Structures are given as C-alpha cells and as structure tokens.
Image (cartoon, rainbow, N blue to C red; front, side, top):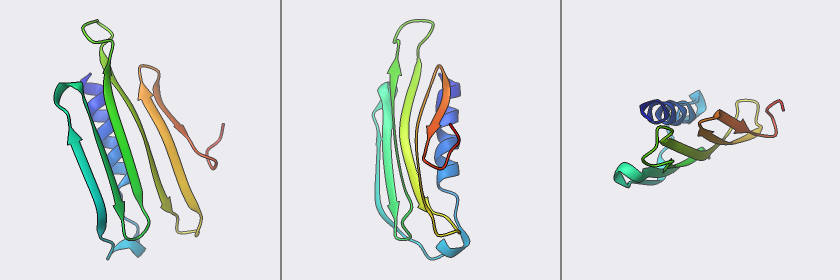
Length: 104
C-alpha cells in the first residue's frame, strides 16, 4: 500500500512540473480532500491551462491484496502548442496511462 501512495505522489509531482512559459502562472482552483485511511482526492487548475485531478480508494480491504487504486488525469499545452491530456489508473496491474499521443 505504501508503494501505491508513493507512486501516486510521484505522478502528481510529475504532472505539476513547470514549463518556462508558466513562470507567472497562478493556481486558479485547488481542492484537496484527504479522507483518511479510505483514500484521497485532489484537483488543481492553473492560469496557464494546466490541470490535474486524482482520486484513490482502498481496494480489497482486510486482505493480503489490500492496496490503493488511483485514477486521474492531467492536461497541459506543450511547448509545441499541442494540447495534451493523459488519463490513468494505477493499481495492482501497474500504472496504465492513456492519451491520444501515447503509443498503444
């Protein structure tokens, strides 16, 4: 379970990495709901068009397979001017991203 929490935090940090053109961006919306041992959810949006949201729930409670299942998305406009959006799920099967720009 600690792995899934650490993994979710790494994904969130990667989604929040700044781009040079965003030096003056401001957070326009921020929600964080840490619902204790059952999971969490958050979202943010910034003035430069970046956005991310994620939620996690505990699956298989009380079993040896207990762990977090994390679902989320992040989006931004790249330095090439293209809008990118990635949705993902992370669970016992690993990190599973999807996006039109990602190979299948």
